[in-house]
Amino acid sequence: MPTLVMKFGGTSVATLDRIKRAAKRIGVEVARGYDVIVIVSAMSGKTNELVGWVEEVSPLFDAREYDAIVSSGENVTAGLMALTLQEMGVEARSWQGWQVPLLTTSAHAAARINEIPTDNLNGKFADGMRVAVVAGFQGISPEGRITTLGRGGSDTTAVAFAAAFKAERCDIYTDVDGVYTTDPRIEDKARKLDRIAYEEMLELASLGAKVLQTRSVELAMRYRVKLRVLSSFDEQDENSGTLVCAEEEIVESNVVAGVACQRDEAKMTLVSVADRPGIAAAIFVPLSEAGVNVDMIVQNISEDGRTDMTFSCPVDQVARAEKAMDEAKQSGEINFHDLIADTDVAKVSVVGIGMRSHAGVAAKMFEVLSNEGINIKVITTSEIKISVLVDRKYMELAVQALHDAFELDKAP
Image (cartoon, rainbow, N blue to C red; front, top):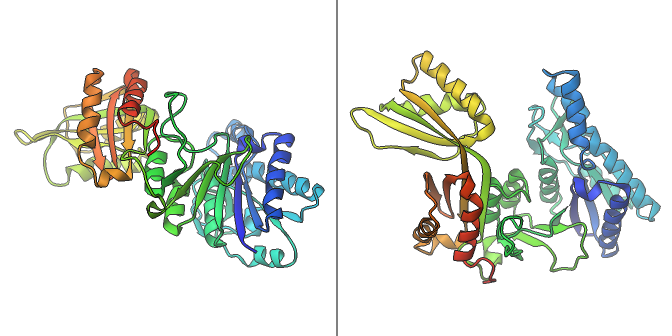
């Protein structure tokens, strides 16, 4: 029988009633002839509660025990879902990560998937099991310890299972009914996309769209897994949600597919750095070692052997970045006059595969922002993305103006 992967996030399984609703959706797919692998998250709020308990007991916790504790939320959901399906007359069984087994690296709390052997589940499907309910977010290390994949890891679990079992599709059920051209809370004319290319979804996910975890989209693109994002609260048909697929499966698309934004950004500038070979490494290696997630980087023109280096990072990593730079300066690795942190900026980006073959997108974006009186502090571009840093107070205005200018409320 063909295989379908269905993933239900925390809000979709937050209560027993919602678990029953999700189970009915699974039952529909079983009736259509699918063997179904269901990936479940912990019930909404449970993982935060478990993390809180860990931090209260042991602020400097053992990461191995952290994983053992926080992974238990998914185990509860998987068992409850399997029981609910059994009560409906569906042959179902729950599986924890180590039982599959989902083999991962040893990086506790941030493990990566190495392999998912298919023999165990396929053997049970051959024996008459119709639904395997798998606890998402977790696996087992080479040392035999429970590991977790990081927050949002159930999306990655689902895509990895779809790839391993060559599933026809991977359906991600969440509290939104698809991927929108921008955040509907900011722009009420935001339009739900019927289809979006992997590359576009990956950029949007990395630039602030919270619909899918970035790693899950990377996996889907690598293994060409068809992803469908849809709501667990609305009635569904074959056209529901948004399909994330290969570019060649999209007949027509706008030049710009969407506008993304990230509110909590910071702009940091090292003033008057010695301009010499290796200076970039001397700056960004310590930042990497300190766990600072650097994004946009701009180096100014050198004058008298000195230059300014600007980069952006999440605002909650500013203190870490300042400490790393101060230590590098004291050790003599780098020399600069000052470090200026602007913690009141936001990143706004336009994304679209159509930008590869259409000139003038950057010019139009900059003109729109200029007409609104919005000053651009930093610019970075890629083949299908243009990102700018602006004052945070202008973020919503920038998103709305760009959404209107590129006519994203209209279908192609």
